[in-house]
Length: 139
Image 1: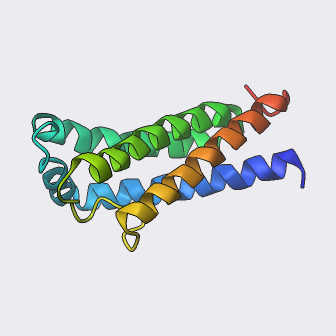
Image 2: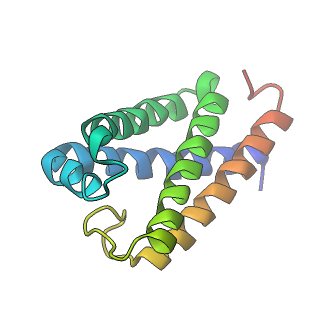
């Protein structure tokens, strides 16, 4: 399969994932903010996180749609996936209870979410490597 097609598929998968996640968080903003606020360390910044995360996901979504900005979008996707994976690891290792409604897609358990995130984290790295190796595709 051609590199450009693989990069396109990876970009579309991330774009759909981030758009879906961002819209869900914004539509259920109060619930999302409340779930973040369940953790004492995050409670003071829960409103900031509840806006920053979906806005970041929308920005990355937009970057991935524009071929000239795709590499930046893939780096943004990688940064988001590292952050979200770190959050899931923290929930699984440090928390006595896992909040409902923060897993995307919603039907996954927290352990399944970790595997899902790791898969997409690897996908972001593959996309970045392929994009960087394609000088006509990278900007």
